[in-house]
Image (cartoon, helix red, strand yellow):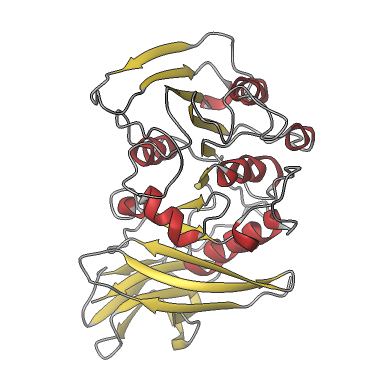
Length: 369
């Protein structure tokens, strides 16, 4: 696949997460996205969270609605807000919507984040609002990657999506939906697709869950939001997967606890914060380890200190001689050398930002302050 990544690095403050804007050439279209990375990059590869906008929105709009990037540091997450074509995602709805290969686009975007940014391929997640919720379900069904969990706020599935779902493996599901949602009906409609219960039944079957569920009434901490919340959980599922439904009685077509003025339509529940619930849910799930079929020991190196001001040390396993490359986020190579064991790199004169250390298929990041 011929794709070109353009990245423009924009650092607001060393106290805040870094925002990066970029575009990817896919299917003859320029596909735009923004993403946030942790300020301090720990040794563990970060999780990747796609946040998909609703119809008529774009990436910056759902960033404003969800504020999911507030968790980049605490959850060690790279949070990505892509744009759909004509402000929508191709999920097979009969009324309007995109006809683009959005599964292919998002798979290409994930490939970039795995190969060039170094996110953990075992920790891929998607969530979305309305049309973006549909698309998150479609990615769980049709993506070539393993999604260990997805979450949908006010978005369901069509029968066509379920018919094309095949075997998604064990994907844990969180669904958040208001019973007074008149855009995407809780009970289903010819316009919006299946009912919430039909979607839950599909994923319970896919995860081989039992029919036993537990229901908790979330404390009604806000008496002026005209809604209450029930949390219904199915946990007796295959391979520790689970299915969770937040039924918001009286809730509208909204992202719970959003501060966005134009985020949706109807009552906004304030008893839960959807973004907090989703990120916590994602942290509880990961895909099975990717095995090395050649039974070869994979090279693993360390980069420290991180962050740094003047220099880094790259420490390799004993008796390994490899080529090390250091690139900036525009792909420019700043350092290359064949080394064995350890090498010190002086980066004092480099601009503040995030850099990638690449060798033998491994990518590690460090932050230069």
